Amino acid sequence: RKEVEQDPGPFNVPEGATVAFNCTYSNSASQSFFWYRQDCRKEPKLLMSVYSSGNEDGRFTAQLNRASQYISLLIRDSKLSDSATYLCVVAYTGGFKTIFGAGTRLFVKA
Amino acid sequence: NAGVTQTPKFRVLKTGQSMTLLCAQDMNHEYMYWYRQDPGMGLRLIHYSVGEGTTAKGEVPDGYNVSRLKKQNFLLGLESAAPSQTSVYFCASSLDRGKGEQFFGPGTRLTVL
Image 1 (cartoon, rainbow over the protein chains, first blue to last red):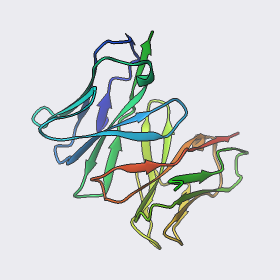
Image 2 (cartoon, one colour):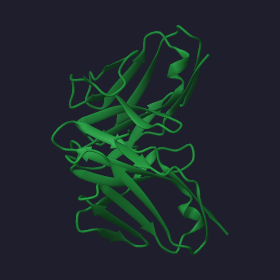
Image 3 (tube, chains in turn blue, green):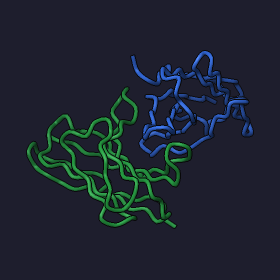
């Protein structure tokens, strides 16, 4: 079983739709959580950190559920420019380990 | 401020050849990393460095060596390339260890024939 698992998709949604991605992690010692965005043939870039109380950045909302060991990303009012692969990232601050999920691909269509 | 740069951007090697990938960062970060990205696998850590003169093995270190002689540079070497090393290689750097953002270079696309 992978340490960090994501639905690979692809998710095909129309502009304006709301879409949600989930990510599960297996190690309860995980300390920090992030969502990264990766455009086609480009490098990953940080989209947002995920805090225990949940957090929002414009149209993006991230949630953490430690009891069930999953994090989620909600995108509201999808734009064409949101088309990308979204990587779930889990880090362990006690050791030197950051695990990247394989990513969920999103296509937003006009 | 260029961030993280990588050279070369593309390379084709024959089995058994060697090469060095160069990563440079201008953000004065202590931590630097080399990852490879393969379809369906996510980014996997090859080697990392917690400061000038230090290196450590990551998840998939076999067949690779690294050096960090200067704080701003992190080199990845392939001693004897194999087709299994065909991948996209990303270098990254960070200020914090595991808690903060990692900044990635644009990647090197390597094909080993």
